[in-house]
Image (cartoon, rainbow over all chains, first blue to last red; front, top):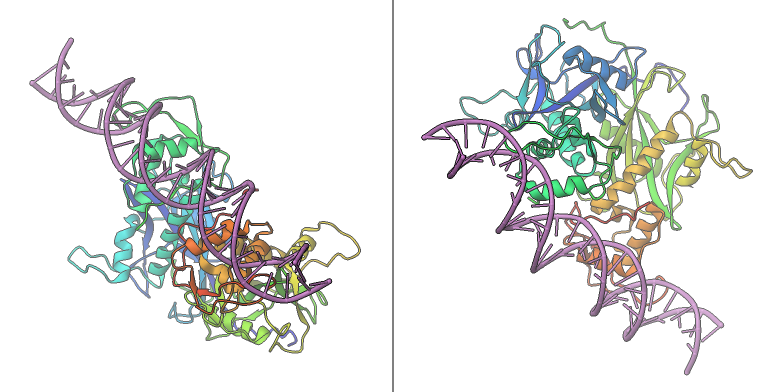
Length: 251
Length: 251
DNA sequence: ATCATAGTCGTCTCCCTGACGATAAACAGG
DNA sequence: CCTGTTTATCGTCAGGGAGACGACTATGAT
């Protein structure tokens, strides 16, 4: 089949962002309120069109900066920045009623931001607990406080992103992307507990993470305050894959 | 930012397929020879444009059938068909010199086909050992027999696909997608050995796979011939995730 | 019959894990 | 100052999975 420039249909290509953080011991996602139809007034994932001369990851990184002021650092070494990785691509023919849109979703793991949503444009954006958003998109538990489901297929995208995060912190050191540059073992444990939605034994967790080579590096700065006895401070080590992995408790 | 239909640049969207199988104890990929520029005469991954009214996975499935005659079965239950899943999306601005193309890559795991490449169109297609293709695309080991690297960024896509397959057979029952409907433990072990490129202890492997609940189901049909003593035949069980996982030996 | 080839069952040891007791170091109140 | 509360950290112990490897079994080839 010879090449014919008119033989392929034109698509719009967008990036959508699943931006996750841990706030108040709960896994939260960044959502923005849509200002125009379709789905006007509904919450949606942040995102936008990929520009003509722009790579996909560059577009995701740009959108992230526009919405949150966060610098992203793809893959290796998220020193000072959020972790960004490609999640999946969604292109059902009718997913956007206006036209044929293929959306490349990216997953961002960010530490809890001091300012609610800094640097974003004036449009309303907020952190929402991921499980509430997912319940809404699943059509579960309809009650007074119930949130409306996310626009488009963003409920599915969010679900895939959360699932990716849940499984990825098992065998990679990515959980530290949710933590500030220096953190305690207890803070890291609360990240795992929030993302997995389970309780972990503090003693076994401590033994596990401090015993995994390359995962945590003590900063020497040995104390901080979180409640009780002072805890050692750590940075993320060089290891990106955890061997042995952290095991999520069975169902 | 209000919606403006002229505000987004048009993209071509394609699917590319990483079709893997195990032949003669080696992991092989399906490649086709390009008939026209760019990269005329070079090997490339099979693929094509996504149609106007067609979902991404449907396009991948259609291309697979066109190239190989294989039926695909996404995700759950690959009874009689090959396993198909989305791999990643590639959209660097200059990856195709003709125009801006975003390609959604899919990974296919297929059993060894009796006919070399059945059902495909007349265009030359063949199975090539994955490591040779990857070496070529890495620019390694240039010698007389050296293969030319794959067209476009297909070397990278293939590498990502192989890596996905390698890690996925660790914690899922997908290795059986490389096997015929009924297979022996030894055949399954040779699949693992080919995909990982390592030797596994037959006794420990046997204990492991037969001891993992839901992985293998004896068909009763108890024997077959592969060389020595007759072996039990198995089908794939209901389990899709392996608990505990198969562990790939350390580096 | 003998050998080579594969398959299958057992054993032994090491290490990881989960369960859980105990101690340490801070703070809040009385 | 003493006591209770909270969080961090260290230790112990039993059970299970995994690697190393011996032993036996059932075929076909010579």
